[in-house]
Image (cartoon, rainbow, N blue to C red):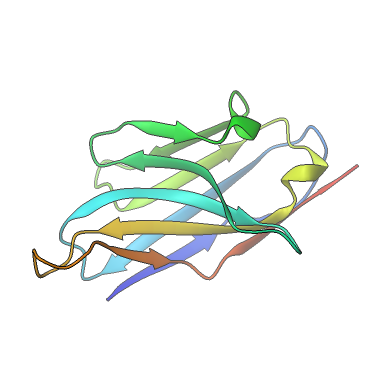
Length: 122
């Protein structure tokens, strides 16, 4: 089992910045990618940013140029630097880790953190 712990959320004014952190622990042996998703009240969970084990990144159009995803050298901690925050960024942000199955013939497994609240005021 893999456990993800998020931190760094909070309340910030529009135009401000926050940095989210996600630390992975447990049975980690073959990570495909890590990333961040978010879910606002009444809306579906959506992708924010991902980074593969090879270092390639992907961002939602709504955050391009404002958010930056990165990781530590061990590739078990991922960060999301959020600049120029807007009220529409308000959501619960969830860390995600995708890992290959211990059994090669089974599907990859996604693990999720508990979520951290980000609130951006006008």
